[in-house]
Length: 374
Image 1 (tube, one colour):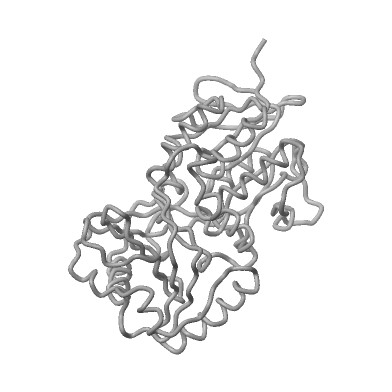
Image 2 (cartoon, rainbow, N blue to C red; image 1 turned 90 degrees about the horizontal axis):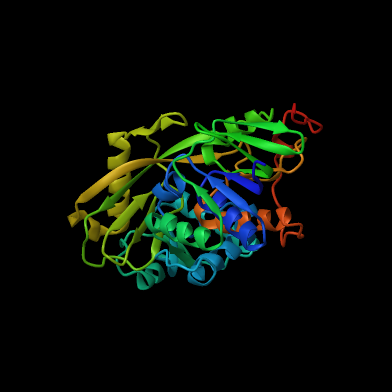
């Protein structure tokens, strides 16, 4: 008789890998599928930032829980992912930026983020490498970053130890409903599962279409860059009120520069081309914030994909009209909050009441009563 898994997870990024891990630890027989190596798409090419200051207000309570998970990753994941917990600063150079910063910091503080507004002088005392031109800064002690490259290695070891059946380099080409099961079709075989989680990031849209659900997912093509190894120039995570800068220096000396400047690419082709003027703009802003960076050379630049729903809130919960089917992804600042959202969904699948509410996709479908066609 063909083996039937309790749960099939499609997508091996932080969301899918975490759902699979906690479901397996909860006693389920789990199969995880990814078209490439684990955590090498969005989860492997992002800046690795773990911040409250770029997280949407509605997600702050989740991000706080997730930050605590990352800080204790060695305990629950069982392996090091290079997490550095440090202070974070969101800075303003102009009166307009200061106004934006004050408003957003206030809203995030109301949601529970421990952010305080400090003067430019106080910000420079916290981070001596900062420019002298800062008017105002948001200061948060709960910040940090992880090494995105190490994430896949850590998850692979943890998943294997939990008994998850890993299928890397195995794209799922389609899903059909067969009686009480789902049939996952790959190039070489069909795998049957009792429950399914679609955790494919920007590919959630075509994945949901397999089940007759139409949910547009926007694809962002974020440009990032990394410097050569240099002497220490900063000890905090630094951003800017406009959201166009994210900076941190890793223990081995490289500085990662991000900020959401868009490159060229799409869901089908990935990030295929950088826009030079935008890369230069991003780097100039970084050097304006941390003047010592002017002496550094760029080692590499790339473009990574990020998924976003129509309301920029997560798609996490049951798939309407399709029993035993779930979706997990499109979480803004998804690297920060992803593990906690995925753990909540795993709790639901295991029959437990999640600690905090999920974000089902019913709200974004064409009609409040819309259901799938299967």
